[in-house]
Length: 285
Image (cartoon, rainbow, N blue to C red; front, side):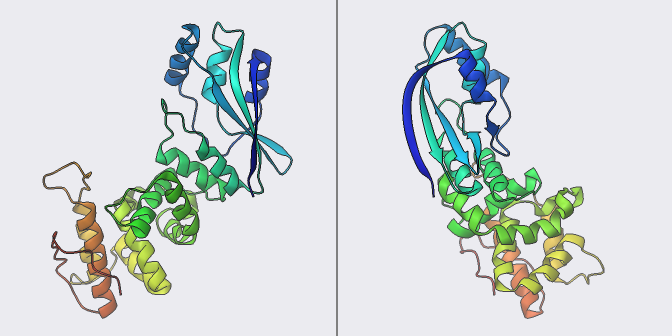
């Protein structure tokens, strides 16, 4: 259980800032951004910096810094002698809770991206997938849980990531063996495909492994095989963003065709992978 924060207002000195920087860094935290440090330093030197929160977390005898690496670095190189801060002290029981505390700190001038937060969430639960798989799984599991049209907040995304991690391990075993990205499997590392893989894996794990391996490899398949038809479509399709138009494929179309192909394989029949934009995505069987 997360306990805290206990708050303490103070002005820290540069030796104290160095001590904060020397605390344990949270696994998979974002790298230091020199441009952001420069902006903060300029604000400080111009007298336009009003201070910050500094999150300190105790876990299993270790002390972690939840945020402030950019602010402390900027302060150490600034003209200021002291910096006003609110020290916030937490304790927690596991790294999943540590990841939750990390997400509490999101400054409006340099928001942490979904990818950065999901990297920390993945690290907190011991996931060692490739960065591209983490991004794709975050997108796919969001579609699986909330649908294509809803954009949930970061807390809901992190919860979905955590709760469906086992499905992610299945996808990792097929597409990123031993944590390595394989270029020729990249056509499957896209949100709608991952969403379909998650949904079908929950329906029938054994059949899902067979079907998606066929889609991945395309080896020795007759030309009418639904897996081969889906593979050919995915390899030739470019996925557009929600604001693009043109010949590229929408998330809705890609997910729908994945499910159409799966359903045909389950029925042991063929399919033309027809798509109707006005119809809802079919339910996997």
